[in-house]
Length: 147
Image (cartoon, one colour):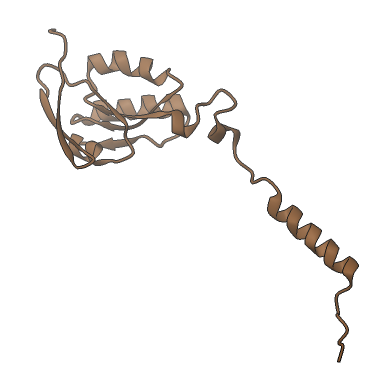
């Protein structure tokens, strides 16, 4: 016994063609994610954390921010005024308010998304900072020029 199909061959081809076109259409990806438009792709950027915001940092940090493949994401400083000034500098540079601030440098070091750390503590600052990353214990030594 033969039953009639409710879908004609022509309707089936139209539906299949429309489905194939919809599924094969390229996804919309922002140009910045691909590294176009003068912006480095996220996979090519070095995320930076800053520990200590004294005179030395205020000299070095703007130079690092000018690098297209560096993105400062966090600042750790004990003094609130310096910490807020550094956040304002970073946020103003990037045109957003994404820079995180910390009173304790260990909170900054605990972030897994930070690739590099600028340690700019002065001569009275912490000379040895424990740095644990990826289950390995490391020690970074920070030096500053004699004032």
